[in-house]
Image 1 (cartoon, rainbow, N blue to C red):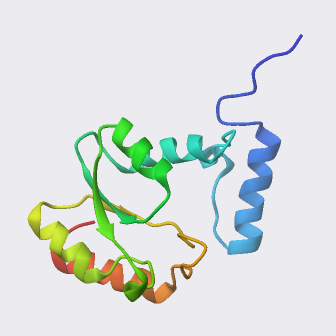
Image 2 (image 1 turned 135 degrees about the vertical axis):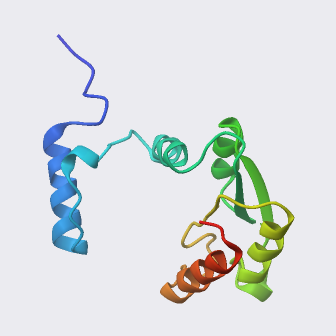
Image 3 (image 1 turned 90 degrees about the vertical axis):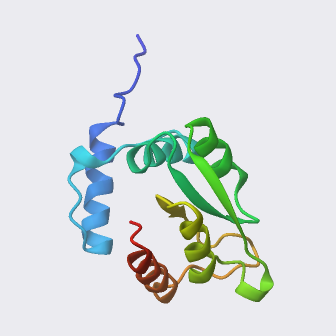
Amino acid sequence: MLNYAPALGLRPLRDSIAAHCRDWYGVDVPAERVAVTTGSSGAFVLSFLAAFDHGDRVALARPGYPAYRNILSSLGIIVEDLDCGPEARFQPTVEQLSAVHRERPLKGLVVASPRTPRAPCWTASSSADSAAGARRTGSS
């Protein structure tokens, strides 16, 4: 008889993922905190539900991955587009985030790296700049 797998994934797989995080990245993630999904969309839903509430405002770079907008919108999260062209290397800038946040506070920024085949990867410097900008505006 066939049965459904456990909702969070098979325990041996979750144990292996936790061990990989520890061995490869030096991060101790208990297997109890690992969830295995059948694809990225399921992971996006779980991640967005954990990070945001209905009615929160979240910034997304445009052009970007359409699934982010669709999933966030379906969860009742307000998406704010940030136009990101070649002059910004297809990445959102601190100035853009600050301007949108001043209009109405943002709860977050969803970043994909690399965002497009032409865009560079999000760097440690990009993350630090965005985090510093968020701290200055009082967002999380």
